[in-house]
Amino acid sequence: MKTRTALTLVVTHLLVLAIGFAAGIYMLPILTAPPAPDLAMVEQASKNSRFEGEFSRDRRDSDALHWGEGRFSIGSDAVSFIGKLSPGPDFRLYLSPEFVETEADFQRLKPAMLQVGDVKTFKNFIVPLRESVDPSKYNTAIVWCESFGEYITSGMYQAGSE
Image 1 (cartoon, rainbow, N blue to C red):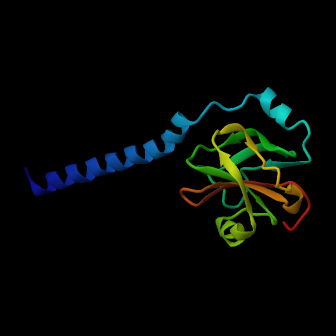
Image 2 (cartoon, helix red, strand yellow; image 1 turned 90 degrees about the vertical axis):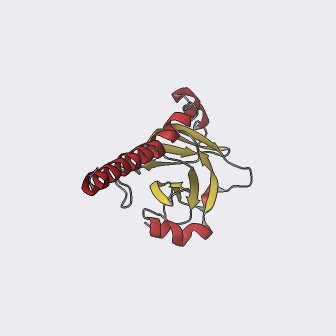
Image 3 (spheres, rainbow, N blue to C red; image 1 turned 180 degrees about the horizontal axis):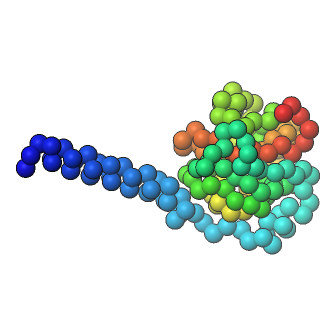
């Protein structure tokens, strides 16, 4: 076999392997995600909400692979969301004292933020709030991919600095 043919085979096989690996990283969270809460469950969780906001695809650091859109509500015992998030691993919900829409802002403000909990579904979610959490001390909810340090989306739920 010629050197050029062997090199072409190696390169093309490595390319296919890389594409397969990337597809696996993208698909694994979708395949392993628990069932999303149905609309009735989310509406019940949001019934006594104190705050409401909206996640949008139009944030500066949202892109085709990292986005969220829909309405969220914050009550005394849970944050609930009706909408969709891009699939990905290790999503976390944070509350921030300032509006955030970039990875740089997230990293800068992370010490002042409160990590509420894991987001395990990509359509609707309910994340419980600990009793000690006072959402009025914050003004923005953020979905962040902890594994890859990727900003997903955010939404302001009370007046503050935007």
